[in-house]
Length: 201
Image (cartoon, helix red, strand yellow):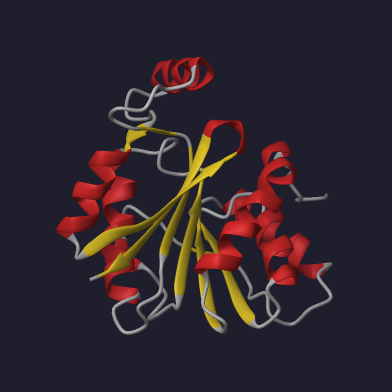
């Protein structure tokens, strides 16, 4: 049975995200992708950034199986085997260090505890590299009009799970500061999304 999963958004947003990554990622080292989902981003970015080792992770066995199948077809050598990792439990992360961390479309489709764990674990892993923690997705910002489509998406997420929903950029900044990070960049993205880059200070 084919375990490959397909996320239509991955095809739509990968080029725009890659443009941001080209500005934010280090020239070499290991990029840890949290909540890598289907694995389509991991394969695309590993091919785009051949001097970096890409390490995809996810808490879902089904996602890990999908990533593994995509990896089996990948001709390069810089895409590591997927690893099970729960962002909400950073003390159990099976990774000792990273040179950059990427998290796409997770913080609004998970409990707040997952985002808290993401920052806590990232602070530990990035402490010696100075690399970025990069988040991508829809966010709500004080003083910035939220697109009607994002407001509707927020309501649909909360209807599915009351712990889900679009996060305020200012809440992320406060959480980041609590773990020694500061927001280093804000990139406006297509379809009313943002890429936010945080670095330890």
